[in-house]
Image 1 (cartoon, helix red, strand yellow):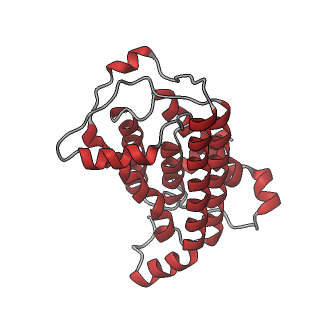
Image 2 (cartoon, rainbow, N blue to C red):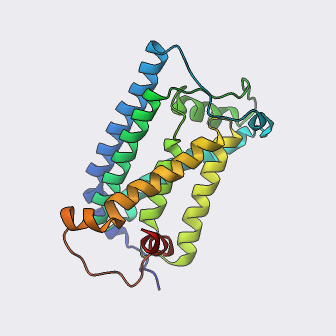
Length: 235
């Protein structure tokens, strides 16, 4: 069985403990993500597109911007629902490392989408314009949107029921799908985002050498997320 439903007092306690970690990640993300886009936009003249020509046939569905934006709820859920300081530290390290790696890739391999210009009207224009503004122009490979959301789902699903785990990772899948359907990213961007998330989680959580160096010993959980169990078997 999974953990009990958290009480309001426990959620408040988690919020107070985890908020500094969340603020730190947000600050680093804003500086790196915004700084890379600014630098590439002002000092780089040669770009490549990570997309394939056939990806132009992917339908444009602006209403999926709502799903795209929901990733921020998933990421910020770490602040409320992680009740172990060890786990929030691991998650923070994983998030910061992937932001750093992505920033280096944004600078070294400046990219742009090959999709045609998008024009949106109706109710979907508001969430789409917000999503398009947040995404900026040149930060393509890997998709940090997918990477951060996937990382959040992995840590949130630890010691949760299989149903919750399935829900969280289904949510991430639709977030990744939304990056394609609103023409903000290409398929390789989303795949690279998944790969970056798993790499950083492995480094800070599943790598026995790193755990032995940096983390205090802890008894193994008998109620670990199926995804974490699967990763442990392969790494």
